[in-house]
Image (cartoon, rainbow, N blue to C red; front, side):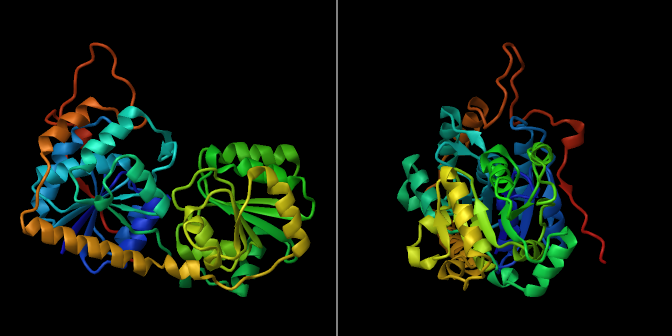
Length: 419
């Protein structure tokens, strides 16, 4: 079976890293097309032996990518096209159907209650999503919470399957030697109580709240892992509060082993994001034996409490009280809870393969298909998230328009040099 994964970009992010982890488990020939930004995950995929092609999409409304993606899919003879993230789902579903591929599936990674991929939901966003969703054979939801949200959007239950995000638990197993080495590297005292947080440093993650709260607790240190547009403001805040000696900002972790070392240096994991679609960082922390406190984590909330006894939901307003209690309890490592095994990446791969087998069987038997032309028209009429409104009198773009010279062809990325 040949499967093409189409994704918006391959920078460091939850969906992108999940894709790489999943492809290591799937017993099929996989290739990846990234519409934009072939970043660190693209390099990692190629190191794993997965071909990666960059289409050089210039923006949300660069419709020239559609004929190029269609041609690429048609030329390679894929059995399944699997799309990830909003923009790739819209363009990928249309291109796959135009290329004659009937087995088309999407993974919904980022549908929140009020936003998708960090952007506010709008009528146009929802309408375009629904119109192109019908071109696929089904959608995989990364959590039961996302499954419910898809249903509320009007996606029929029969078209939704649950395939939660997954991790490789062995990669996060706590190792005392990693704790000592990471603390020495980051100049964290061996006996310090270290609160930790992991994620992209954006406003919605509330890392600034965590910095202010730890700053008010003299006995606590803080380790934040990640990067993003809020990194410089966070550094400024740390200096203004005079706590540079107790707060460390570590660069993003590109591999599970790197992240495991950073988690080993922590004593308590805290996630303050008000809205999550899964909460993978909390599961990784539990796999490392850490107690975890979170504001939102569907991955835990969708399970019986006994499956994750070390994780507890808190209100943002209770953060200082929570940290004070944890400081008085002191450092501890917990047994890895059942929730971690529930989210083993091998289980996710089994669920994905089950859907692949079902949709390819349906496609081979001549199952009903939607009309690609209707969705193509919709793509030109409805806005993608964050897309600017066209100026009055501006020329319309069509899928057949000539692409810009620098984006005229798909660019197969070279494999990294062997070390």
